[in-house]
Structures are given as structure tokens and as C-alpha cells.
Length: 100
Image (cartoon, rainbow, N blue to C red; front, side):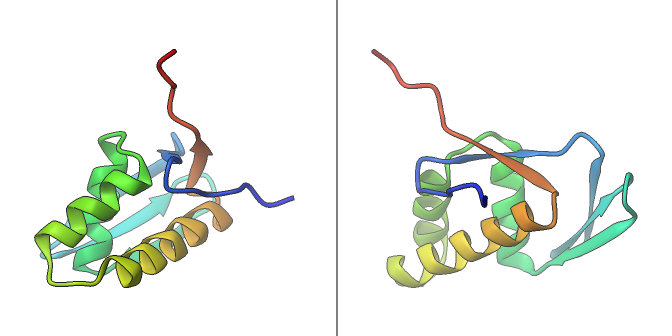
């Protein structure tokens, strides 16, 4: 059963995944599987924010603020990228800790 991804989800990079920036883009390599995954400049920014532990909603808000993009379009694209990263086993999904 696929993991549900929401705006509250936090992606955790798999320990075996390494990332290298190539100019404005990034290449992810899963050292366990040998799987490569390329990211465009916006995808690279998303990945860097994922590594910082931000929830997807916060990542989307930051991308909307940094670029001239409609929130609905950004939300759709970031959630799609998150799904691809999960599907390829490069990240796992967690819900952030909630304050009582």
C-alpha cells in the first residue's frame, strides 16, 4: 500500500542516498541500488529543503515565495516529485511531531 503524502509530511532521505550538485541541478544516487535520479533547479531546491527537515507545506511556501509560480501549480509539482522520490525508494515519509 503506498504511503500517503500530505502537506504535513516530512521526507527523510534514505541513508544510502548521496546527492551531488552539478551547477544548478542535482543528481541523487542510491548507493544500495545504483539508481540515479536527476533534479532540475527547482527540484534541487526542494531536495535541499528536504535535507533540512522541512515539511512539504513549508517547502511549497518557500518555493512560491522564491519563484513566480501559482501555489496550486507548485503544490501539484512538489507533491508529484515527493511521490516519485518515495516510489524510487530514495526517501521515506514521516509526519512531523505535533505539539500537544
